[in-house]
Amino acid sequence: MADNRTVLGKLIELDSLRGLMALWVYLTHFMFLLGVGKSGIAGLISNGSMAVSVFMILSGFAIATSLLATPQTYGQYMARRFFRIYPIYLVGLLLGLVTSWTYPDLLQSLGWAAASDITRIAARTEGESQAFLPHLLGHLTLMHGAIPDNLLYGSGLSFNGPAWSLSLEMQFYIAAPLLLMLLKEPARRPLAFGGVVFLAFVGKQLFTPYFPQVPSFLPIALIYFLLGMLTALYLPKLAERPQISLALGAVLILLAARSGHILFALPLAVWVGTILICSLQGWPMLVRLRKLMAWRPFVAMGESSYGFYILHLPVMIGWGAVLEDQGWGSSRALFALGLLPTLPITLIAAHYSYRYFEAPINAWAKRRFRGAMLPPALTPVSGRALEGA
Image (tube, rainbow, N blue to C red):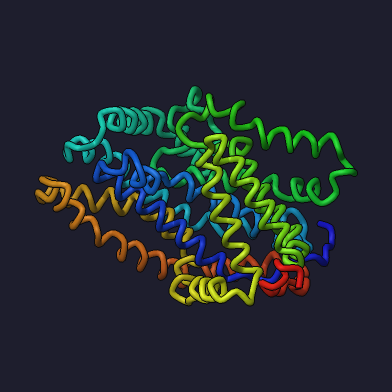
C-alpha cells in the first residue's frame, strides 16, 4: 500500500467516544427489555442505531489512519484486522448460541413487550433452529450480515443481535484499502470513484428492502465509513483552518435535520463535535471537554468496547431469564432493578477480556504482521484560529 506522510497521531478521546457509544447501545437493549422508550426523547435515546452509525464513522477514521500510517500488504492488513475482532466475536457467538433461544420466551413472560417484537424475534429464533448450519456458517465467516432476509431470514441478527455490525465491519475491512485509494486520488479512476459516491448515496434505497431489519450490508451504511475516512485524510488540513470543518459540519447537519433525516444528523453532529474538541485548543469549554474525554476510565472503557458491545446482550438475556424465573418479572420497576447488575458485570468481563485475551492476541498479530510505522503529524490548533488569528 502506498506511502503517505499525511498521518494522524492517536486521539485517545476517540476511544472514549467508542465506549460511550457502546453504553448507548447497552441502554437501548436495557430499555427494550423494559418495554419503554417508544416515543419522544426516550424513543430517541432507545434508538441505538445512531450509536452504531457513530461506530461506523469511527471505524472509517481508524482504518484510514492505520492504512496511511503503516505501509503493509493487503494480507498483513487483513490478518491484523481479523485477529482484532474475531477472537472476542467468537466468545460473543458462543454466548449467543447459549442464550438466544430463551429470548422469545423471556419477552412473552415479561408481558409488556410489543406483540410485533415478540413475533419478529420468535420467527428469527425459529429460523436459527431450522436452518442452524447456514446461520452458523454465516457467522463463522463473519458474512452473516451480507445475507438478505429473503435467503436466510434474520441472518444479521441471529444468535447475538449486535454481531450484525461486526459483519458489516468485516465487509468494510475487505473494501477499505480500495476505498481509501479512490478517495486519495479520485482523478486517477474517475469512474470507480463516481461509482463509490453513487453507491454511498443510493445504497440505502437500493438494498434496504433486502435487509429490512438492520443495515448490515456495506452499501447501505457506506456513507458513514466514507465520512470517517475523509476525516482521516483531511483532518490535518482542516485543523489548520477549523472554521472550514465547523461550517461544513453545520451545513451537513442542518441539511440532514431539515430533510427529516435525524438518524443521519445526530451521529454526524456527535462526530463533528468530537473532532472539534480533539483538534482545537484555547477555548476553555472545549479544553475541559477534551480532558474529560481523555479521562483514563473513559479511555479504558473504549479500549474494551468491542468486548462490551458483543457480550452485553447475551448477558442481559441470560440474566433476565434467571430474574424472570425467580419472580422478578412481576413489575417493570423490579425487573429493571434486577437487570442493573448486568452493566458492571459486562464492563468487568469486557475489561478482563481485553486485558488478558484481546490485547495479547492483538499485540501478537501486530508483531507477526507488522508494517513500517510512519511518524504522527497532527497537533491541536488554537481556538483563535476560528477568528482568523
